Image 1 (cartoon, rainbow, N blue to C red):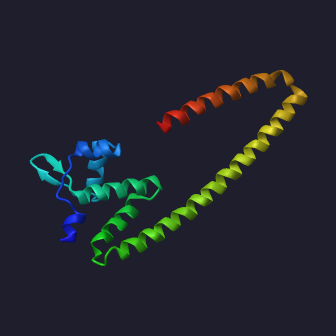
Image 2 (image 1 turned 180 degrees about the vertical axis):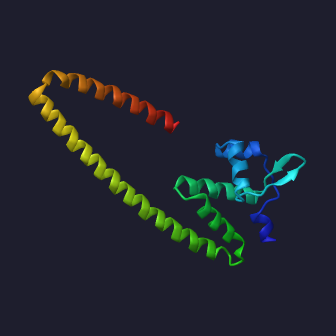
Image 3 (image 1 turned 45 degrees about the horizontal axis):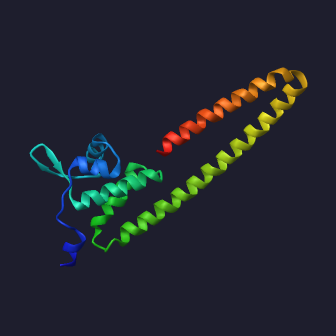
Length: 159
């Protein structure tokens, strides 16, 4: 009986899932081709179960944190292990910790690159100040235009 409460008989269309998760039908079909989703069929229509919906949610979460589809598939496959989710949780924990380490390393690399670029900018500005101060206002104007463009990109991505 508790199983019925956890897995309602409700089904979803491809359109409903796309609207809910803000993804495309093409993405869902791609995940199906990769074996990550397995919707039932009603003629030519795909019929997604509550389990498919939960799997899609996990796929999208995994993608958001940078897991490869193969890694996501490994985690999803453990759902059927019959151990109350322990294997799936252990695998997820390991993958998530590995991803944290990778992201922290990327962050360090990015911070180093930014520091090097700032040093380069300072050296170039100093050299221009000494040799061609007339070019600095153009560089500053370009910097402002570039920052404005980047701010626009950041704001449009946030929407």
